[in-house]
Length: 307
Image (tube, rainbow, N blue to C red; front, side):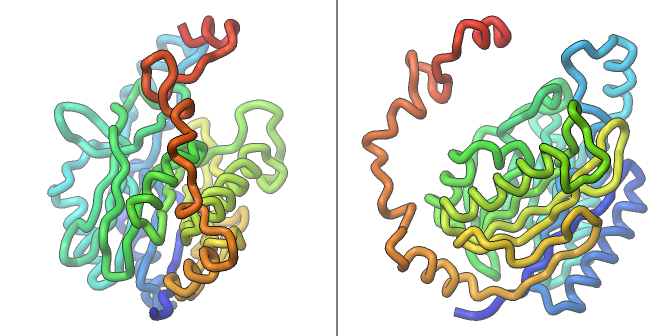
């Protein structure tokens, strides 16, 4: 068991790819100067996120404007990711981008080093309006890296306990949760720390870490893009749910050093081993109702809203 230094970013990214590379390069150099072995960058840091989530009562004019301003769709084996890999060298870097694949666009993430891509992921859970721009991914899987077994998820995924649990059951010791998590759209506040969605972001991060007894590394976008204002709050959470480092509501780089194996051993050896002590034979109603996987009964008013 060895100590690993981990860094995670809250940073601003837009459509200008050259500006994105400069920001990524600067964060890589900062992380390297701190002795980091892993750097987790935000969702959509190559080309930016969507200018708005859309949907609802969005006008046709607004819809067309949004669809004309999508981020560039990049290939997994394309020059853009190879450029980031060259910058990464022996540093393990996780980052988000818009992936072109199978004739569709995906909100995606990769973990890579200078040797190439170690793992890739397409976002499974999509918030309101994101499905108007992206196709959904269909699986979770962990993968081996030079710093241990990792898993990835993106933004809204963190609101679903099953997503992190699937990665933990596949052996993930570190889960990177990349986000472009905005402030609430209603009952808004001036101070980010008072925002309802800031509080949800923090609650989800700590809950997912402690219930799966993993090291949780949550990045986020910063600043504004289109109609969205992002909550920052990049953080590293230990397997006991304790926040080891955070940027708070400011952009920046949070860094900590942790012995991952020892931290997991302590969390899982203290009388609560959440993965070992599961009772999956009793959980069938969670994943199957009316013969449709993952679709629970809804109250009549919600059924109508979803129709």
